Image (cartoon, rainbow, N blue to C red; front, side):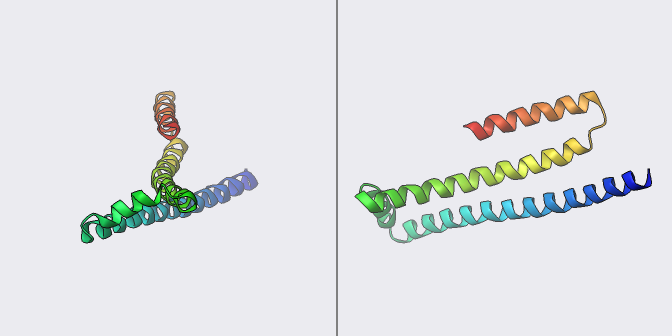
Length: 120
C-alpha cells in the first residue's frame, strides 16, 4: 500500500495545485473582462453617451463592425465562462469529498445545472 498511497498523495497534491491555479486564472480573466466593460461604461458616461453611440455606430461599418462585435462578444464570453469555470472547479473539489450516495446525487444535480447554464 506504500506505493499506492504515495501515488494517491501525489495525485491529490497535483490536483489541488491545478485547481487553485486554474481557479485563480479564471477569476483574473473574469475580473479583467468586467473591468474593461466598466471602463467602457465610465468613458461613455464621461462623454455624455457619445462614446456609446460611436461604439454602436461602429458595428455597422463593414470591417470595423466585425471587430467591434467580436470584441463585445469576447468580453461577454470571458465574463460568463470564467465564472462557470470557477464554479466547475469548485464542484469538482466538492465531488472529491463526497462519501455518500445522497452527496453524489447533490453534486450530480449541481453539475446538471451548471451544464445547462453553460449551454445558454
